[in-house]
Amino acid sequence: MKILITVGIYPPDIGGPASFVPKIANLLSVNNIDVTVICLTNQKIEDNEKYIVKRIYRKQNLIIRWIKTVLSIIKNGYDADIIFVNGLPMESYVANIFLRKKLIRKIVGDWAWERARNKGITEESFDEFQINSHNLHLEIAKFSRGWTATKADLVITPSEHLSNVVNNWGVERGNLKVIYNGTKISNKLSELKVNEKIIKFITVGRLASWKNIDSIIKSMSILKNKNIDFELLIVGSGPLESDLKNLVKELELEKQVIFTGQKTATQLADYYKKSEIYIQASGYEGLPHVLLEAINYNLTLISTPIGGSNEVLEDGKNGWVLDLVDGVKPDPTNLYSIIMDIKTSTQLRERKISNAKNLLKEKFDEDENLMKYLEVFQS
Image (cartoon, rainbow, N blue to C red; front, side, top):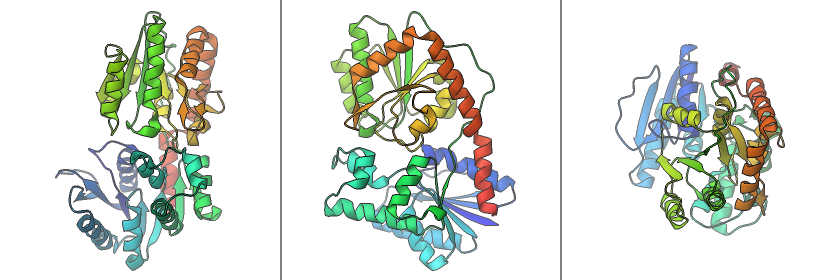
């Protein structure tokens, strides 16, 4: 069997698809499946994998890049049995007009909404964006993302919530399958991380508007004003990095709030080990891998219950629920109250961490969930 995988970001890029694709490509390769990956890149890199990697320069004329990508998919997909789309959906669909191959697509979000939020075109929540009407430009983008999804023989999503969203785009239930994200599970449940002198927080992700990192920073200001010692690690980079650093400076939090930039998996593991509370304030997540990692390192979870996140939180059974105001942003004062509740609720905190660890073993074992992809391809 031969499988062609398309993806927009790939190592050394950092992000969900860049993390997932090498794992699934390696699994397929060791099971005697020929794999070729087509991805975008910013630099020339020598790839020493068990599979073939074809890199297309990202920083070139968009039309030229788009044509090169389509032609590369046609060339490398000619002998493929399946095209597995993790990114570059329109390019893959156009190429498959000529190839007529089985096409499986993994959808982890809505690029039309993300682009609109990044450009400041809308302040709507993810779910509001799905049902509201917009200008012609956005409606064309929404049509495009839904239309290309309907052209796949099978669409895989990492959460039930996102599966329902994609179904509303027009993809039939019979062409939808949920396979959860996963993480390498540690069977060791370490002692509860509690430091009486300083509370250590961490949040990980792209510094974009819907991540609501500003709300987290503002809640830290309340902690400081209450003379509570803390440290917040913000891991990641993105378009709002400069604005967020200015906010930290404005609130005089430079000593307490640390921007680490993007980090490797090994470096991130060290940060998890030094932290005790994970905060996610996002206005949307498909099913955030970082929550699973935080559970694996026995961190206490504070998270908005949006998208697939509540499939991890389970309405507060496995962590503290941070509500969104008008479905968009959390209230920093509410986040502060939750932090104080955690600080004084040791037994409840222990129970939620234990519940989360059990859920991780039950639903989010990376090895087991990757095997579900293998079963899909082999069938």
